[in-house]
Length: 453
Image (cartoon, rainbow, N blue to C red; front, side, top):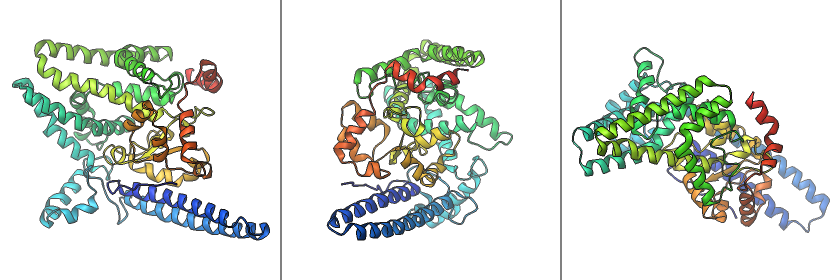
């Protein structure tokens, strides 16, 4: 019944994890088939055999989990011989030795990695130095040249380039805002780490510091609860009109809603800072537009419009499937994706449940955390999907393609594994139902009051 597709483009630890989960499914289906085939066997004999098989399977499963965890941790451990830093998004370091000329690999790539590790805060995060170099040698000079000598062809090509960059950039900044930077805390490097977002953020569609205040100081405090401005619980999450209302409110009112939120929470300093940075950014864009409108549209306004849409489409997909019984549980109000776009190109953004459980967890540790806590995820009936990203989840929900979503599920735990595809589809449909105000008061009342203090 279950067909788990393991893409060759997945990061190595995702491949290990998905194979591990697929093996769990195979064992369950084999055991279930054996039960059906042995249904005519004498009950005492059958129960004894089941107990023996269960103990053996548990031992095999535990041994496999320990082996997979050891492999995952080795890849992340700078002191281990199997440590592998991330250098590029599209390819793993282990594959570059066979793809590059030996001279290039030995005398260009390896020295670059060694140098970049003296810049990056974590030895594994060479990729962030790589991307900063990329942005400052392409996006920044291209934007400057557009203001110096504008052509529509260059403007279109520039926006296309930014369209390609902004997803990866945003998730790099996701690490930046949670960890207080991505580069080493050394003189010169630290100053650059603090200042570069003021240059690159507007080029990628972000307004100054809003991502930090909205995401870290607001969204992760409220956790998709009733006071979260980006909460999905008051919406019917497979309804296009509800989705458009959700996006529209963020588009046009976040500049006002977020400062008001902080005032309501008795955080006037955050309110003033948020309003200052948001309005200063708008004033800057208005000034640039009046001075030179055409490059301003392609360099700043189109990326801003795209980013605001992307943020809300992504958040809708991350928090559209909310359990009716425990909507305040991180396990049941967010999901986990094991897919290429989210995890190879966007710093393991697919592990959204893991991120909500510990927002400061390093991006490379998410697959390790999931496998180490697989039984907890299973007991909490967490939702896991593969071969689909947040954008497609949002679109599939709005089109009511529940059977497709059910086929993308990676069932964990016996409760999910024994469901048929139609049963899973029905379960997912129930998870998109909007909450009434009475239900919100019942489910979140105490928690909401506690957060408001």
